Image (cartoon, rainbow over all chains, first blue to last red; front, side):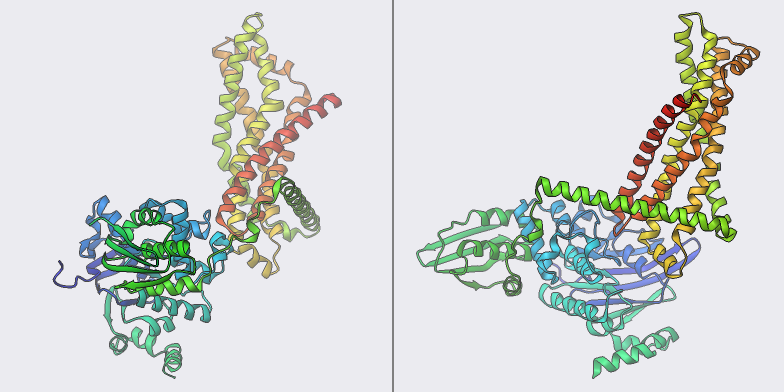
Length: 258
Length: 371
């Protein structure tokens, strides 16, 4: 029995360097269970690299990354297969497999990790699509036939297929119109409240940030400063001031306050 | 604890005890247990979740679906100590209707499939004709306006399709003519006519093999590259961007590639002819012991003035076929990256087929003309 609540993600002293360029320089990050953690930073500050490092898709130059208390780099094959089932991921452009229908995309992880009969597979993919609010008709479509918003939802459905406890979302609302983006925010909040999810998301969308995130972390100069929105917004760093008190942020806040 | 499912009661009162591992990982087991539930349940069904360990969403969904399938709307269902998401799933089930198979899933039948095939072929032919027409228009304009020749692009494609192909074309021409000369000299030795291996090589290489092998190599190398490059540009909306700036993609992308191939394929053919003769000559020298002066004499006697040109004249025609098919296939890429791979494959297969078909036509034509 765990006595202390282990953080879901713990990153310490992370260093990532590419071709002489330092992206992360001693970055630390903690995400505890059931929070929605937003990762913010300018272009090229290594937000996606951070996510890829956490998922073990990329080996860091130095540092320690733990998922559920276990170091990601030191997992055996069996452990990795175990952890993977607890983490759902969506990528920036959906990353749906183009040669499979939406339903088959959702069934892909189920086929790999559960032995189910075809009827049961259909039933489960229907569940996932219903959870993300995709209509039945979308199941037999190919990703190229879907709109941007539907692709994001289908990607989320695939990420939810194995019932993960951690969701990692890379720019889930980028490229969506404000109404679809707001719909996605609501969906995320709803699923979060229903399914005991921990969510880490990279986002540039101030609306999403203000609406959904319980804590945020800003990557600045290779390090992360994190806290609640109010705490972070008080940081005197010029980038943070520009980000949270710039014209767009003011407009967004006015909107969400009123 | 392993997952288990116990059904008690009878008549109008039933109780379902859900116990053990009902997590997402035990989905397959849960499905199997649910499949064993009898159809006879009626009246009130109480689902007791109190002994279920960390029940997952998938198994709960499967349970609700199974109960629905058994009782339809007639069953009254109560939950005891349900996990929080049961209410969520229940709401979800009520919101999304049980799906009916969509109408367009109907199979069109053999006649319908034939009809669709004919229509799609017709559309393809029309598009191809349109492309050829636009190419001709651009070429006609280029004659009047030297600016639209796009020289930088043309030289780049001549380099990529021609210069970089020299090693592989040489190697293949050399090896094939060595093989032909070797097999030929073996047969001719039976008649004591080994000297005629020179005639064999000269005519085979100059008339047919030089140009044909080069065309097939170029179709594989450059025809596929044309399709893939233009297809990728289409997927990335680069073609639309050009159109939006009122720049003609045919003039910018298609015509330079065709012209480049019309220049580089004949050049490659000449090189292939030379290495082919060299390869055959080397084999004749070392295997059939024909001295170099003898070889030169025989070569001069074997080839008519037209032999070399009969091969070379085909090269520009093949070049146009390969380039037009490659660029056309690239322009046809739509929507998905999967299409890119498919069209590239079609480009190579079709251009090789057309090259061989055209070669056959030339063969008949040359015989008729006494060329």
